[in-house]
Image (cartoon, rainbow, N blue to C red; front, side, top):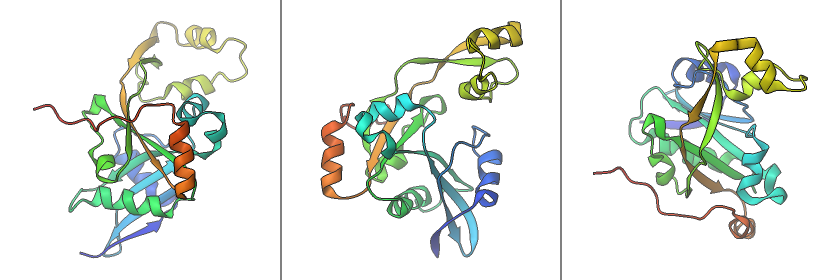
Length: 208
């Protein structure tokens, strides 16, 4: 079967992100690629700057903060013949050089990140334990989305609590498996690995 990867635009990837992916929202996207089979778009992968400066700084420090991209969506209609790993592996070759790609596998969805293991990402353990701001009936909204609604308020936490009242609550964020891939020269890769803030560990495996 003929497979081809191409850059895609918002109109191409939007149905995949909103109708197929479980998060049902669109993250910040800087680069997007599609998997075509016989001229039919079967899957998309997107990359963007992580919204959290803490996340970007936490990987290799301030010197590398502008180099960090997140593989933030991978969506396929079906996953035949290793389509997901083929799409990721080939899209990584199209990204700018000297970049640090981070991606997460959500434990709440029982994901281990097998596709990242198949494409030679580095595994750096689980994300830290954190909590998220939530509103009953609007659980699909990201905490940052809620925060942005009250931008300019001197105390956004207080403003959100007062606005939503009893519907506002705090929930524990599911921990995620964190994977990293480095694009660029061998020299750049050595610099990144030397400054990496997380220990490199063995890939997680499914419990028997």
